[in-house]
Amino acid sequence: MNIYEHTYIAAPEANKKDLENIEKRIEEILSKSSGKICKIEDWGLRNLAYPIKKNSKGHYRNLYLEGNNKAVRAIEEFEKFNDKVIKYLSMKIKNLPKEESELAKEKK
Image (cartoon, rainbow, N blue to C red):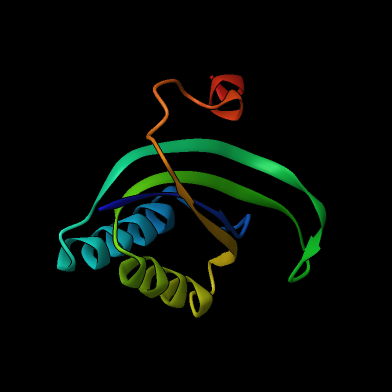
């Protein structure tokens, strides 16, 4: 299994339930291919560098996933057509980080 860092930005009007539903669907996609979510970081509501789909703010969420590339492509396909997700990015990484990211520490 590969490890991926997956970050998505949800629309500013998305509430906690919307974010949970997105992550629940991601977990369902991963479980079909024996993958899992290893770690979730909430970076909070932040200003965007430039407007995306007429939004100047967004809820940033960072997930560390274990799975294969087909599962990650399925997750991106789901997010592509989800109206609550305005941007996403997945990157393959070598190891799961042991510490929280700076943005997660900053939010606390």
